[in-house]
Image 1 (spheres, one colour):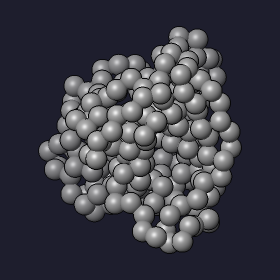
Image 2: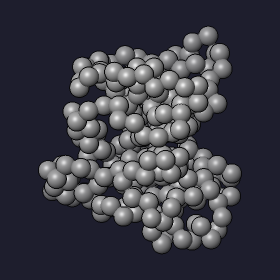
Image 3: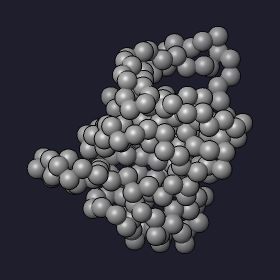
Image 4: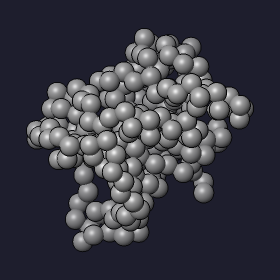
Length: 230
């Protein structure tokens, strides 16, 4: 494969929302699912989010378990996977938690339209990849990540990045925890937002498994890009 094996992992409410209408992070799953997510991070070469997630949630994207960090180091890896932010216009704050917490490589992916002065600041704190004209070209980006030695890529959203990756055919599997709550709201982000698919473009999924966890279920799907629903 010319790109990394890529999977989306997310938690959503029973009505498919991943945060509130104010785009505030909401606890949807419990400790068992958080541990599952931590294991996924620890087993990945890189974790990727969009700039919207960084601005709204300020995640560190680090491996939380001391044992898992130690195991990564014993295998010759950094404690944390490479942390990638898709940030077309170089808006990542210099005091973001991805810079302040945990050791490891940070990557900021920008477009050619990003302000040069902002790019220069970020270059002092991270590896900056330029891909695309006005927005980050995701297929080009994942090829550059593959060239860096990234073979397993975990995508943690948000909804716009999820759509971009799926619409470009760059996702292999989707793991979603579905929690026992309703968030509602026409403007609340769902698992996949963006422009959406037109009839004849709707993407098919192959069911892999369903496991009860905490007060919800974890659904696992394989993306079947060849299957399109008319």
